[in-house]
Image 1 (cartoon, rainbow, N blue to C red):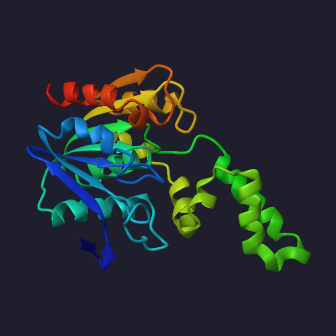
Image 2 (cartoon, rainbow, N blue to C red):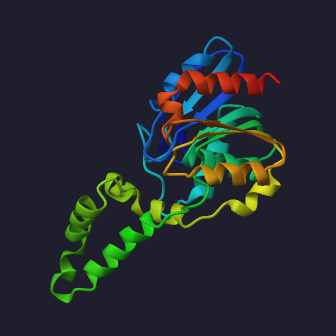
Length: 246
């Protein structure tokens, strides 16, 4: 499939009412494939590689969360889908929040899992501070690109900036966005799933979602971190099935 000239990869399987699985930053269709398999006998399953990940081509360099969400809306319309159950993990959850407000008729049921709808730590700011410090040293300023990669690799080994350098401008824009103001505007039936020991999106964010999204239910999974849908796909699937059948 091509959208606005960009080659996009997706997987579609099963039959029935459609359900869309959207991965987090750095993920792909593989990330949620095991979870989606639990719905293959009863649902029309769609998994999508967001632009810049998996086998989909890069987004425009100025894309932020709203641009990604608009892309997902175009993708669904191009498939001829007018209403869908939406599952979003981490960054994928952020897109679900935007879609539920900007395209409310498109999302019939919303499932948010470890959704990164705002930044509560200073990791991304630390990386930016390191970059500014390195560039401020005149004698090595011209070696900025090399030093940036070296600095991130040494001091921020797990940073998304070093893992996906071609998406650096997108990542900076996305981590600066706070979607909190959208939460009270969500009228869609919503399920919130979270790992109790999540350090990337702390569980306090889950309670804020529950408080601000009026038609929502919350389930916390004990002794699980941010990778909840990847390591506990059966338990997550059971929670989703209970939710969509009520």
